Length: 117
Image (cartoon, rainbow, N blue to C red; front, top):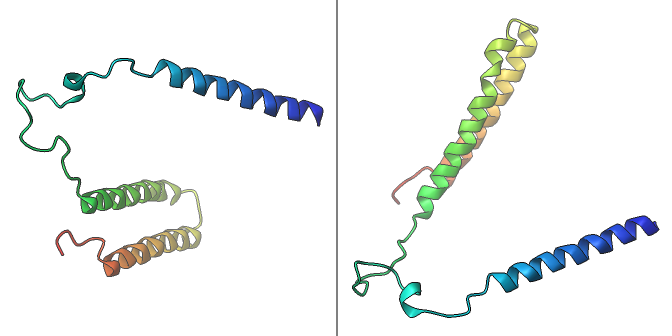
């Protein structure tokens, strides 16, 4: 128990020291207005330097990523067909596809796939 407490204390002390050193070393000593302003050929910026990000685009990208990974999980079913019983293969494939279609129907019913409202 003593060794565990000592190692936890040592880990906490070392991590606090590393965070403190990183905080001290990353501070900018001189704040320069010109360096912190956005660069547009030497002129003052006409608009905001930040562009608005579409949350719909992010949601569609995440949904695509999830379905892409699930399709990757479906790919070995063709190879396993020769190695397993056809009934087991069929039950596994259909149950996985059923889960995919239920998830797709849920996202469709919630309006997550609609680009414009």
